[in-house]
Length: 347
Image 1 (tube, one colour):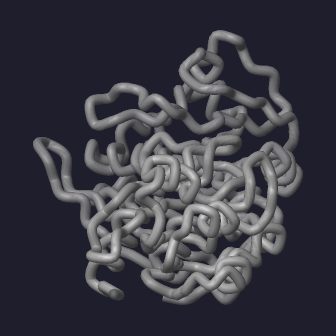
Image 2 (cartoon, rainbow, N blue to C red):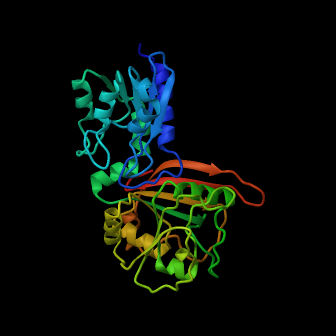
Image 3 (tube, one colour):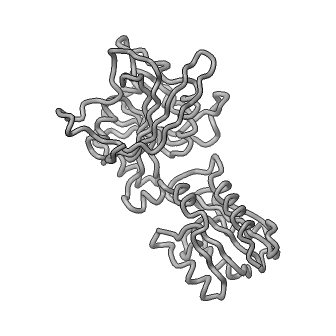
């Protein structure tokens, strides 16, 4: 008997475990799977934990054992139909005797498509589209890479209300509030590359790690990437052992992104200074902008972005506002506003 409420609850759970913190990003999608008994009871669950590990369906089937027969498999992505480091998930579901499969989103990867056909040919009922939007968002960077053969780029900056990222004397800590900084670390943790220019490393000496609310480094860290030709002192914080670091000696954003894509990286969090930000914007290689705006005025100082070659208002780079979130004031910190925007649109 079909239990729509139980299946929706199971899909929400599958999406939740697919997004488990600490699961490495990269060339593989995030996938979760929940097995339901005919009465809607959860039998087992599993999620993909990174390249070379069992896929979500295989993990759930292993946890269920013989109890998998007759179940409904609720999966966030169409079961794969190809052999890579692991075997086809569609075949595994057939062998386990699963009776029904509910899929959030069809697999856009041509190499893995066809799982639905395999399942239906074996007499298994397959339903698509449950919470498809949520599944697409979960793997937006991975799907972006399939379409564009480069990583998705999110440019983050913090600025005063008049667009200054630092005061006239160069001080910038902290333009953003503590709440904004915590939020930044959350977003960092959703990416697999932290990218800055060599000048940021030479002048500001950041660690570029992801930290929890208590200020401790989390277990899994993105790759730290420094872009630029400048030689850097080996005692810079970015070269500590808290996370891997790569120095790409190039000023060409497209070249840098190509190298990162070949390394299996799919989401770049760009936190470089105004020069690097301007280089990516001029190249049309910023896909998302996250701005933390502080309710302060500086009147002078370093701008958030460098020269874009724009000389008239008619040529201004337009951004579409996708989300506006007020990060509440706390202690002596004022409230900050986080704006999430997409280049090329209009508000």
